[in-house]
Image 1 (cartoon, helix red, strand yellow):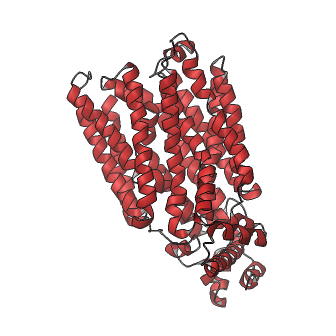
Image 2 (cartoon, rainbow, N blue to C red):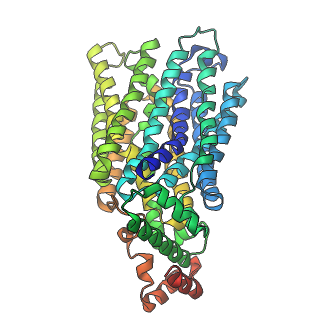
Image 3 (cartoon, rainbow, N blue to C red):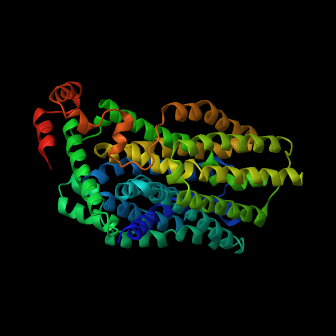
Length: 500
């Protein structure tokens, strides 16, 4: 089946990313609903709105960390399905909410579900992707996040045309979450488990069949066999380096470095300010003089720009140019767009200068375009690539939970207050971080990973585990250095002879 089957599996699994985008974006239009604001007796810039959004992100922190356990114990498929099932419950509570407590619990559960899926879907995709197309395959996660935002915005826009006395304005957009969740719960039954996870669990023949189904094109039998044996040897060698658990990612220096790279890319992505725009763009447009249906219409157009750009980028560009160049471009490009946005807002405090208002919308759109050419897809690809197999589940859990969702929780709570109080000056927080932290760290410390197998990426962070075990002297030294991580001479010897 080869490439087309791989894309099919990646796309269906990315329904979890669709839910990420939809659940994240749906509140943009819900808080624009007069009926919703009146029903919960609140306003758009209140701490209550921040709480509704931040509880979603807080739930995602819990879900991401839990995913580190379930992925390693029960598999990648099970974790994604569990997230979809929890999302069903959360969506039902939100759509049926009779009071604030039901809404908050529903948002927490939805966040928990999205946390599970946001860290497991990219790992699942990366582990079955061909090295030459891994950017495309994992980039589909960001693509579906963007499509989720599009669908949530246009469903919200249409629902807002209902009468202000109708609860349909906000209950229907929240209820729609059930549809993709059901698709994912059922659809994952028919998808294969990650071949690397199967090998990890000793299911070698099944793993070989899955690799063949995913990558065979009629001529590459030798490559598939070589890839299979490389994965087997590397996983066995990694098992010899450290005992299972959370501590090895902190005690094994190379793995600690790789975990910090995954964590950093997630933090840098949040610090572009993209999610602040995603959640609160209607407030920004209102400051530019766009109100009523025009406001949500502009939001709908904004949410289309990113996914279109992202699709072009992951299909035609990402696997050619690599990871570093887009990230460096993104830090500078987003910073320039935010500086221009702040400058226009400072000269247009009441939103009455039409030219300045149009320019303000342009630069908000520009942030989305640049983000989709850089951090949007690259953050998920890079995070999944740099983690070795033995900490891939738990390492991605930490990276997504802290770097993505914990930071997002902070901004979700603070941003509506900051946008109401200091307005355009708030943008400079993100500009300062991008130029003073993200840019130098990426330039000096992030290696390029394009078109390398997940096992070859070991070389970018020092000696490969397999090569360290090739000479007896190095094995002894490895055991001495990593004793606290659980290395034993028996494990090392077993790793050397397994699959020889």
